[in-house]
Image 1 (tube, helix red, strand yellow):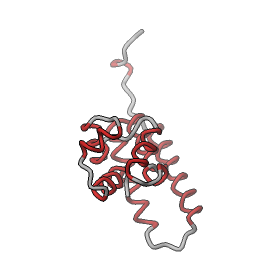
Image 2 (cartoon, one colour):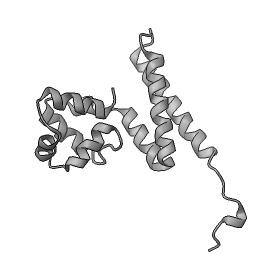
Image 3 (cartoon, one colour):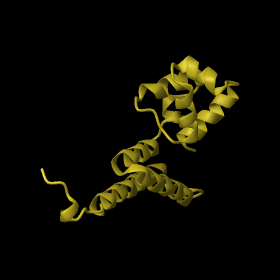
Image 4 (cartoon, helix red, strand yellow):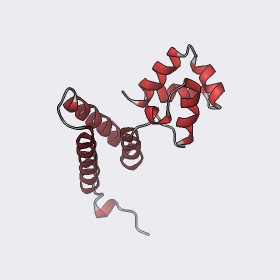
Length: 136
């Protein structure tokens, strides 16, 4: 389950509106809305702690390494990079469902595949032909 889905479920279980949660957390309503839609993630890791305290859970539950990967891919490779990272995480999560692999091995495999994704994206950047490059 992704950060936004967890946040929405916990908020509803706590019988809070998005506006109430935003006010208690000291965040904007649009910020909470974007978190729940999955379009943005907290830039400051302390926000996970604040939200977790309000919703009665742990920051570790709200935040996971896959969220960091998706956020990094979006920053470095733009919208398409973020969408590709989300798709990769979703497909890998489905691959592990109901498996016999140890949790540590799954984490290591997930990290290795994420690193391969980033490496491939960096190597396959589209290059601007010299005639279109800006000259200093």
